[in-house]
Length: 309
Image (cartoon, rainbow, N blue to C red; front, top):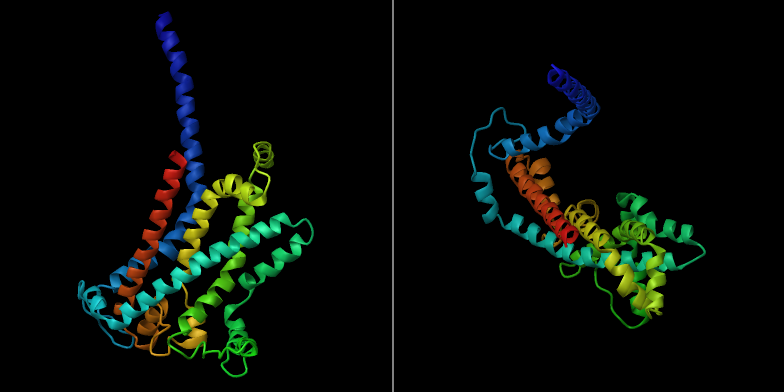
């Protein structure tokens, strides 16, 4: 009899705990439901629609369409414009990503070391991020103009004949990459400043006791190792943002001259909204999304390895 009473008294708390856990779980789902619905409506469903359209020959203006399977994807690999835009995007990213990371880190270190005027310099360097790039396109067109632009005027002062920055196949992609670096440095600077602020000051004091007296030694022994996760995050964000370049190409060059500046998103725009080949543009979009997913998976894998080691 006493054993039964003891057993009953022990099961009551467990039932109450399970009931409380069920209520907490229901509340959690209720709180998450709006976000889940919005994610499904604006991300998951459009993505599934794009994948479905990529398997058809749908064109805007035509009543019907038919299922073509993987024909659009097969056509991509023989499409010279697609290969050119993919190569241009890779070159653009290879220039913008390391340059914006290095300059963002350098600016963050300079601002962190400065005791006065930090807010002013943070604002100045962050202005390109807050500015509308389409509105700044006029300024860049003037700066890089082959005859009246200040850039070529300064080069002429030292005896160098400036090129047609945005009108030559040899320099147009480099010019767009420089604009991309200008726009990305401020954002990377803010991320690195956050990482530098999170480093405990005691580590610098301990490094000084161990003989790290110069700024370079403190950076190499303390700042750089502690900035590992931040650097990985900045690198991933920089690669993704550089792959998504579109505004400068559309506004300044329209992919020219001779497709020398045509990038992947501009090609997708051309196919979908100019040539109205929505099915083919959807296949390009799926490839673009696959590239972004691969970049994110690489980021998570590298971060996990750093955490475990």
